[in-house]
Structures are given as structure tokens and as C-alpha cells.
Length: 132
Figure 1 (cartoon, rainbow, N blue to C red):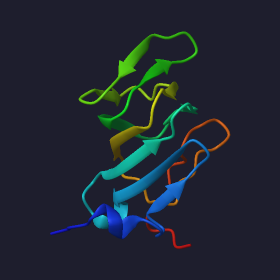
Figure 2 (cartoon, one colour):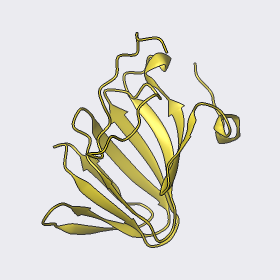
Figure 3 (cartoon, rainbow, N blue to C red):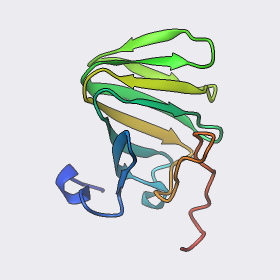
Figure 4 (cartoon, rainbow, N blue to C red):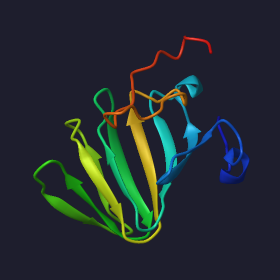
């Protein structure tokens, strides 16, 4: 059984920050669940462009308001508490946080925790067996 609290993740390698967001990784590939689960907070007034070429992701909004736009040509969907979106086709997207957005994100295959968004906005597919 795995039990973790958000406070235990802050300030550890499971907390990853970028200019527009901070992500706390509750479950990673090494936890053996077959998916990873993160709490991601997007800072108010920011835009973040992303594309997951190697992962599918489901995102549930817990707090805040914003929108997700598929790029380059839309459509755009509002995000508010209770909204779920799933990027099941590796869609390139732009997240706009009108206020602080707090999201719960699930990735498959699971993230290792070492991923960083590349210049194209995508995470690479990393092998958990690789030691750093």
C-alpha cells in the first residue's frame, strides 16, 4: 500500500517547477502502479504549450478557471472545477490559466519523474531502469 501526503512531496525530487507551473508527483513509474499521478498547479495569467508524443494524459480540474485550446486551430474548451479532459490522441495544446489552476493529472505510460519538457513541449519516453 502506498500512502503519501502533499506536504511530503514539497521540496523533494518529486516536486518539479517550471516558469508557468509546479508539479508534485504522487505516483511515478518506480511505484509500480502502471500509471503516474501528479498534482499540477498552473500559475494565474500564464499560457503553457505542451504535447505528449509518448504519453496519454487525463486531467481533472480541482480549483481555478482557464481553458485548453488544441493547436494550431482549436477548438477551445473552458476549464473549471469538475472538468476532466483526456489527451488520448497526443494532441498539441495550449493551457491558459485565468486564475490559479490546480489539476490532478494521470499519465500512461507512467512518468519516471526525470522528464522535462523539450523544445517541442513534449516529454521524452524514459526508461525507469536507466540510473542517473
